[in-house]
Image (cartoon, rainbow, N blue to C red; front, side, top):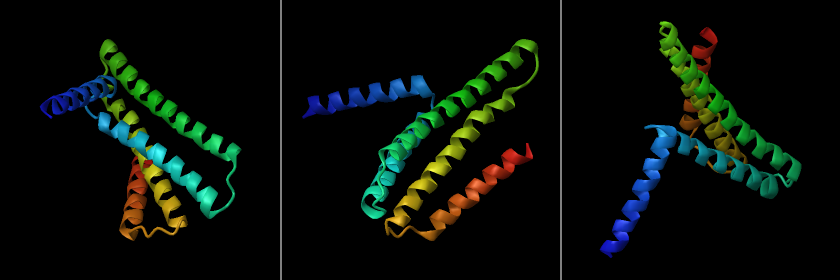
Length: 150
């Protein structure tokens, strides 16, 4: 039993180390977003197939492509953040504030994914607490307000 526990710990430690090396100390936010992508896609398919009876492979493919393109935008936002921050250091201008570009992009997409999951669930007849839906609306409005003021 101890050997199994040790192997599980080694595997878990290796996965966390790899994720931290790839995504940094906040890797769990990216994994959470990926999980939300998968859940949103799955609930969308279930809703279309079993509740709306309008499953369409073309629509499903567009949805999958959209999820991939979200990751492209997130990558670009973080790349721009890191690049401009480093260029600012090179030319002696403090551009460290651009680090928020990537995090705001991730936050906007994360809120959007969670809201989409909840909308799918509501359309399937699942009772979702209204405070959760309203809380996400408030969060989205706060993020939009900050980004529009800039």
